[in-house]
Every structure is written in structure tokens, then in C-alpha cells.
Length: 138
Length: 461
Image 1 (cartoon, rainbow over the protein chains, first blue to last red):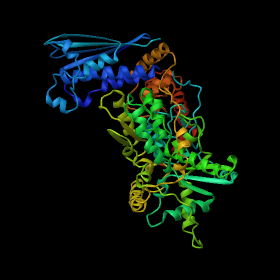
Image 2 (cartoon, rainbow over the protein chains, first blue to last red; image 1 turned 60 degrees about the vertical axis):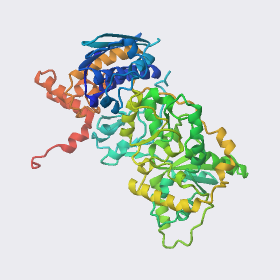
Image 3 (cartoon, one colour; image 1 turned 60 degrees about the horizontal axis):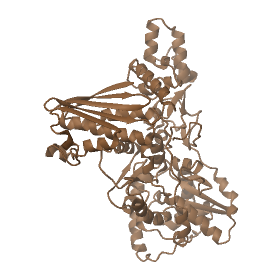
Image 4 (spheres, rainbow over the protein chains, first blue to last red; image 1 turned 180 degrees about the vertical axis):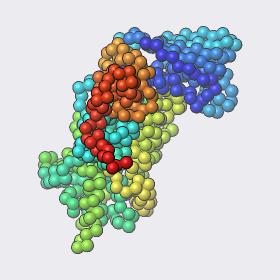
């Protein structure tokens, strides 16, 4: 079961709308509440990252009974040093974005904390792909 | 993992079939999409309803009512205790002394009156202890509003563990007063403790408690009902004198507990108060995403202005809140010398602390399309395909609250695609159905009477 959502870069008023849609689906699946929460947090962070840093992106959600897989792919500046970006508190967000309450440098670490598997691939100048997997533990 | 489907839920909101005219107002305001129209009447889905009362407010013909215990039930007991929330006092103008109001309650048939907010004294002390003991659980969400507790169970299962497992002031007050009577030698079975409720959710909570095996109340009396009784007693011209009950003094902060921001003052750290079920729902959505920062305590209430906005409140909710604040100011002056408090709650403090906890609350997952994930996925896929064929105008003429809800109802076998009037038009034009069949389909949802009532006669237009 695959769902796809568009994410608009820079539009903070709509940040989280894709995640909200996915959450509705997760509620219909009778998943473990703690799993819903982990997925909700991870995908929201990934979505906001696109809004904060990229021009545009897509969120693809692929669900089967064994796992929930979420790929967030964006067209944007990319990440120069992924390892560094995974450090808590490290952020490239400008002051304006921080004032909005975003860009505290907790995004990627928070995704890692909540995902069972996380894969980040990035080409500087082109874009980033964040792949999140959460297992349903059947 | 979650409570099974077979579980039954008691609801205090009842649809009076004879009065229901079959419209869409209630369906459209329900925060959990728990209403449908079938055969011209609103029908409640018990597993989804949280007893918030929005439907009752929206109903144009008062066809949704709050059930209540027969007032005469109180006379089964020799000792009849009314546990009264302070918003009841807020129903009356400030110039009527509280002792007069309490006296009116006694004259109506009760033998004892005790304010629900006496329980707030103890709970107020326990909240910050609870926060400390559950430091990893942020935020702690107040368990005070039963509609919010149910909303979280139904719609935000992942936040259920954040609900504070401590009883509400009214329950503590009820346990305390019962204990007081028992200790004074009154046989337990002669005591009837009744809550004067400003809302439907509390009735449901008493009849089918969440987080406790048995409610400390023997019954519930609706606040509007008692208001009418007490109002006429106070205004009786031949009234000789008011019997002044022995009254324990509340502190001002306790008196304001059930208003918005009434609890946050007792919590430690960063706390926030939100009222109104739509506001609460919106906030919980964000909270579930972890997108609104860290809060230590949340006071969430289903009604605007807290309990002053309860559906059984007679007075304007803003006026009620203002009156309570004014009375609380008067109390400040009177209650300065109350530092050495020796009231009922304090007397039985140890006993109450043993009983203050709630049992773990379980999620209800009322939005799951199936217990089996594979089946649920198939249903989701089918519902999405169905939805893409629906007009997306959410007119609710099908008897479901919107097009998405109709698509889900179809896969749950609660509705048919032909319930959609747009689909019917298409089928008519393609001659898949005949006009009389189309008519029957609409009649099935809206009932025969609807058409009889609106039928045009020759001279009408």
C-alpha cells in the first residue's frame, strides 16, 4: 500500500500536513499506539526538514504488515556532512527559521531515535533522501 | 493491546427519536464522527462517542438530551449527599449568598451538601508529586475532563499514557464525605452520594468509569434540573428562613478549579490550559507529532470556559465564570485565616491518598478499520478508491458526515455507494437504476416522513 504526498519548501503554514494525513491512515490500521507515536514524530521531523531547507519534496509511504517505510526526498541544497548533521544541536537553519521554533538541530537525531532503521543519502547542491523504517513487530 | 470491540460504552447523550427531524447539524460538529443519519433519525456509534455534548449544542430541535437519574432515586437513601461543583454557585447572581443556595439544595431533598472542589485541596498537592514521580512522561495530561480522557482514548491512543492517573476533585470529595458519614456510625447502605453535574461526560464516567472499577457516586443529578428546583425554592415568597448547612470553607484557588486555568496553578513547570473540544483536538494532533516543544502539564477541557461552559449549565458561561471569580475574591478575604484547615478532606487524608490513584487507562482505537492489519490495509485501499469517485463536497446527504466518512462506512458495510446522491444521478443518466429506485435510496437514509413533510401541493408555490 503506497501513498505519496507533495511537500512545499518554505511554507511553514502547511508544515506537518502530510504527516497528519499519514497519521489518519495509521490510526485505521490498529497499530500499537507507541508505534504510531514513533512514526508520527519521525515523519513530521522529516517533513519539516524539507520545509525548512529544501525547495520542494515528496513523502512516499509504503506500508505492509511487517513494516512502515517512509521515504522523504527533496530538491534542495543537500547535506555536506551527514555525520555532523546527525549531532544533536547542530543546525544550518538561519535565525529566522529558529525564531519560528524550527531548526533547533534536533530533527535528524530525533528521527534516528524514533526509527528502527534510518538511511540518509544526499548530494550537495541537488537534494537529500531520508528513508525511515519502523517495524510492526507482528 | 487495545480494548476489544465487544466492550460496551455507556453514553449519557440520548437521541429522542420522536423529536429528531433528521438533519446534519449534529453529524457535522461531532469531533469523532460518531453520528450518522439512518431512516431519518440520528444514530450514535457508541464506540466513538466521547460524550462531549457538541451535538446537543448544535441540535436545532433539542432532540439530543442528557439522560439523568430520576430525582426520586435520592430518597432510597436515608443520608442523601449532594456533591456540588462550584459552577453551580456561579449560576446564581452574587447577591444570593452561598449559604442560601446550599440551603435551597437541602430543602430540595438532600440531607448533606459538600462542594466538589474540596477534593482539589488534596489533589493540588498531589499533582506536582505525580509529575516528579513520572518525570519521563512529559507532558502530564490532566484527567479532570472525562470527555477529554475519552477523546484521547479514541483518537490519540499514543497519548493515553500521558494521562495523569489521579482522581478528580469531585471523586475525592465523594469518597471523603462517605467516609466521614461511615466513621460517624452511619451504615454504608443508607448513604447515597450524588453528583450535580454540569456535563454529560461526567454522567458517562459515573455509569461506566474509566480507570476505576466503581464510581464513588450512587447517581447523578443534572445541574439544570437542580437549578430550577433551587431557584424556585429561593424565590418562594412564603419561605421562612434558610437552614444554614455546616459549611467548610473553600480557598479561592479551589473554587476556580473547574474554570479554564484552574488547574495549571497547581502544577509545576511549563503548563498550558486549553478549552474547547476542537482546540483540544488540534493541540493533541501537534502534541502527537512532538512539534510543539516540551510541556510539563496540560489542562485540557472539552468546554469553552471549562465547566462554566458545560452543556447543563443554565447561565451564560462567561457570566458564570465572572461570578465565580467575584465570589472567589470575596473568599480570599474570608479564607485568610484558614491556614490551619481541619476539614473533612484533611481528616481522612491518609485514607484518601490510598484511594486517589486511577488504574491504567487503555486506548480504544475506535478508528481502526479492522483488528487485523492486513484486512485493515485492504479496507483503506478500497476506501481511497471509493473516495476518488465521490464528489468531495461533504454535503452529508448520504447520512454520513462527509465523503471520506461515507467511503469508510461503505467498506465497513454501514453504507452503500448508492447512498451518494451524485452517484445516483450518474446511475440514473446511465440508466443503471430507475427513478423510483433512486427515490427509495434517499428515503432509506432520510425516512418516509421527510418526503411526506416536504411534499408540495398544487397551491404551495
